[in-house]
Length: 113
Length: 112
Image 1 (cartoon, rainbow over the protein chains, first blue to last red):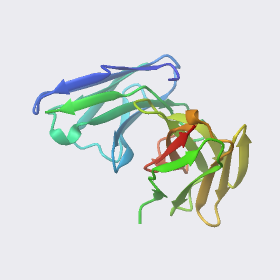
Image 2 (image 1 turned 45 degrees about the vertical axis):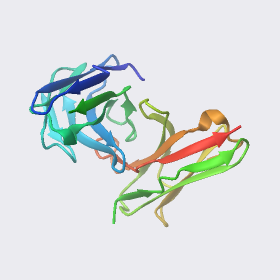
Image 3 (image 1 turned 135 degrees about the vertical axis):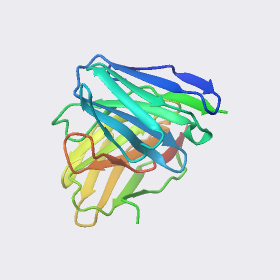
């Protein structure tokens, strides 16, 4: 998984609780991404970062926030989890000039009850 | 019309068969085309990458891009049970990865 770790790998939480997912990379890549994957929707971009403290929204950013204080770490926070945020979350990384490709982490399976 | 269309399958073939997986797209600005393979409960991994039109071959895998028809294909020759996975097409109009659009994936099962 291209030097990418995600934690936790599995989490069950209750509606209304805050949740933070962590992505850590050892590749020193500039870009980091958070995707969610759902049946019938495929992979959809939530947020991405193009440098420390530089982030932007993706296709499905409502209800999510992100932070990047170090090159190697990218955090995804669900301020108040809802059942619609039950999903598999993937972190990905890339460098400029990577020909548009990204490398994915192993994923975090989140269930909101 | 969705930007990227991909038949979800499932597609079931016997070992040794030739497999053809396809995607169509609507945005003519796409320049970079990829195929990712995803095993169950794993992250997607890059399988093939093609810039603009043409063919690319890597072992048993061949990727084709026809920009005039807005159509990309992945061929798998001599398919193996280990090829059983979901195959995702993806495409982008820039090199940074920030504009990557994925198809929903085709699930392939190869039986021995």
